[in-house]
Amino acid sequence: MTLDLTPDELLSTTRAVRKRLDLTRPVPRELIEECVDLAVQAPTGRNRQRWHFMVVTEPEQRRAVADIFLRALPLASGQPLTERDVRRMNYHSDSTERVFDGLRHLADNIHRVPAFVIPGVEGRTDRAPVAVQAGAWGSILPAVWSFMLAARARGLGTVWTTAQGPLERELAKVLGVPYEEVMLAAFIPLAFTLGTDFKPAPRIPRKEVLHWERW
Image (cartoon, rainbow, N blue to C red):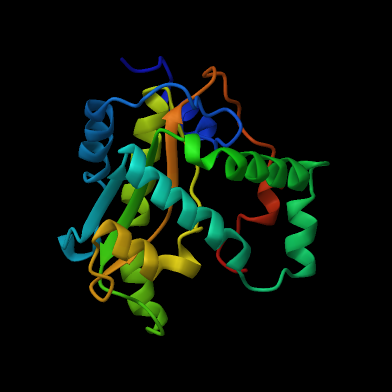
């Protein structure tokens, strides 16, 4: 069963779901398989189809993976925020606080999430040139977004996180993934949503992101 959403509604209401994940309801295997079948229709560089989707639902394995998620969170680091980043993040009042409040809720309940989806792509890009990185990430990100859209259409919620990053090697070992050959791209909690009435998010004006002919 899928939700009655137009293409525009599906694209604009597939949100990062943290606080509205239904932690009491298992996700049927067949629904996840349907989402993966749609995901692998996405474009991929040179049609190499190097994508993989690790799905974790077994209770003991979920606990082990959730533990890695929690230990990895405080280790995460990114590029320093610019003044423009900060302005955009706070363009709409309380938006940043809502994101961090949702993250705290997710962390507090990560062990209760019924399924984790961890997409991977063959070929590591550590210290690779931008062209190589673009090819690898461009071959997994469209597929993962398609998975997330398919999940939304089936009443499921997802949120892209990169929590696996600091402890990727340890997570790969727990999952039996050959770390030297496959890069784990994301850590995605998956569950039915509490309600399906998601709305488009407020964003910065189009004029700040759309460029014609020149920057």
